[in-house]
Each structure stands twice: as C-alpha cells, then as structure tokens.
Length: 389
Image (cartoon, rainbow, N blue to C red):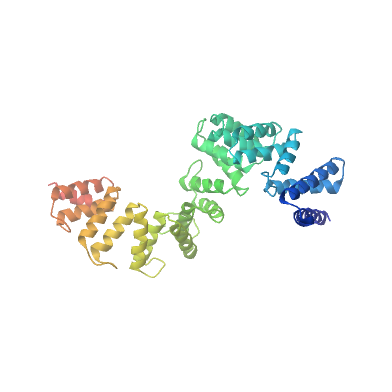
C-alpha cells in the first residue's frame, strides 16, 4: 500500500510538472513560477501535517538531488534561497553545490558551511573537497579530513573515499594504509567506483594488506563495468588472461581477458596495445596474425611505449609482415633504447657487434650491452664479459 501511495504521489508530481509546462500556453518563466508556487504550497501543507504533502515533499527533495529542478531559473533559485534563509539544511546544501559548480566559491562556502554545521553529510563532504582542493579557500588537508570524517561516519561514500586517499597519500597526516583500506572498503560497498579501483590497486600491490589477486580482480571488475578507465580494463584483461601465470587464485577467462584488453587498447592505452601486438604475433588465444601485430605495435609506439619499438624492430629485422630492413630495425631499436627498453639495448649491442644495419663498432656494442646488463639481461651480461677479455 505504501509503495502505491509513493508511486501515485510521483505520478501526481510528474502530472503537475507537465501541466505547468503545457497548460494555458504559459511562457517558460511562468511555467517555472507556477511550479515554484506548487512546491511552496505543498511545503506549507506538509508543515501543517498533511501526510500526502509530506510524502510528496520527500519525493521533491529526491528529485532535486538529481537536478530535476533548474536553479538557473530565478524563481526556483529564489525558492531555495528562501528555504535556505529559513534554515533548511538541504536547500543550503543544494545552493552550495550549485554555486560550487558555477565557481562562485564565496557563496558556495557560505551555504555549505551553514548546512555542514547542521550535520548535513553531503555538505560536509562538498566543503571537505573545497578545503582539500583549495577551491575559494586556502588548501587545508586537516580541515578537509575533519569534515570528511563527520560525513564518512554518516555513510557518505565520497567522504569515505577521500579519507582513504588522505590516509593512503599522507596528506597532512602520517600515512596509514590500513585505515585507508578501511575507508575504501566502506565506500566500495556503496558502489563508489573510485574506492573500488583503489582497493583493486591496494590488494594487487599488497598495500595495507597482503597481496590478494583474487580480491583485487573482484574490485577491479566492479569498477570496470561502471567507469571509462582504460587502466582498469588493462589490469582486468591481464588478470583474466594471466599470461605469465603469476596472478595466484584469479579467475582465468580468455574471452573476458581479450575483451577487456581490447577495450583498453581501443581507448588508447599503449600497454594494452603492445600486449595485443604480442598476442597476435605469437598467436596466443587467437589466430596468429602478423599484420594485426604490426598495427598494434605501431599504435603502442605512437603512445610512447618502449617495448612496442622493440616489437617493430624485431618485425623489420626478421621480415614478419614487412619487408626485411635492418636499418629500419636499428632505427626502432634506438627509439626503444632512448626510452630505456632493456631488450632494445641488447639488440643494439648485437647489431653493433655484428655490423647489422650499421658498421661494426665494438665500443658502441659494449656500451649498449652494459646498459642491458644493468637491467639483468642475461645474453648482454655474457657478451659484455666476452668482449671485455
């Protein structure tokens, strides 16, 4: 019965809005004035104990939270200003959010402070973000943290996430990864995607907890389905493919792995593009296709990913899909080396030692072998030893 009343009230509100828009050929301004009058009269009835009006007021507040009412309109704005001046914390909060979006920080601070003092969690979170970012006020991590704590204790997921960040990064406080993890978990359970992503990272890297790839995969997947974040998609693709079998206890699914990796690659993530290049080059889970491998390496190289230059150099060195061209291979290896790529250093050492695509230059060869050896490349260590005799 209660659900029917709520639905009926919602339909009544929608009917009022539609009537206000279309009836009597009213102008846009008159429509909004009429709607403001309806809301104000309903509030008066609610204050006098009318239960239907009280239910409708709750629905109106919910709709206001999702911006169904345009505060840019003078009549609606004046209505909220009147209610805010009378001490209504929600109206103060809406005004604070509105002025913050308009970058009118003095007004935003004024209303958010008033609402925060009344314990409004959203206002406390918003005000905390203004202190955290230094918006219209001197940056103050400690004040931000206090406000976030008040809001977080009331269950505000945004505040919980920011508290996690503060304790993780040590902003104005000694870092405490376990406390950061606690707040991220509380926010993540409320479906805050930023918190879910942070949990994925912390469980992956063992920050504030033991390394737990299975738990990391769970949180990354929850975030991946809701946000446009190629880095999350890349990590999820790596988990599902688990190409090096280093992710213990993760769920392996080739279809999902390829899907998420391709999502990241198509959204300009160079690491994902490079990984797809190797997948097609070696035919891992897909039919071997040198052309696709070359194209993915090329895209990854445009993103400045060093390993992609090695892949392109290898293809030109051996004539995979492209015409064999040692000078072109040398050029790509040099680009990879300029970005510190270990395998590119090693190949340049070989090219200068053997005179492939260039003149023999043993001193140059040793220099490149030395750089590769410093990164643990075994062949370079051996060749450097031999050449140094």
